[in-house]
Length: 150
Image (cartoon, rainbow, N blue to C red):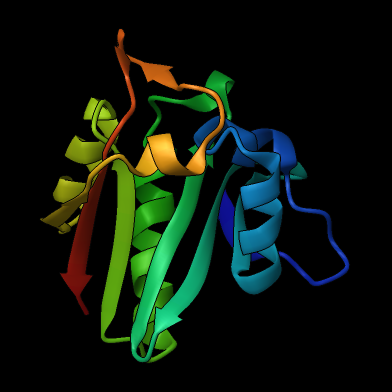
């Protein structure tokens, strides 16, 4: 498996991006402003992440997703660690990520990769999504924000 930056003429894997973020309009908006990276095995795309500069010296992983058939194989961790290293090489000082209050697996993964919880954006998913989102048997309401110094 290799992780590569998509060229500007290549189409991002919307099916995977929409696994992590169900809003096509939000995904379209941030892939235009960010850098999209994909994990490939031969020509099969297994996973994706998007890095988006947010403030001076700060970048955010705004989407990370792994094809459902390939989850549980460590690909998500490799993507997150690749994003951290890419941000470091690009000269950023801080990397951030956010996830839903009910995203138990993602919260554990991000902390295993060195992220620390910094704050909670209350009602984020109520304000930014027209339809309610449910995960792990509960409604996704708040965004848990995490960051890591590089």
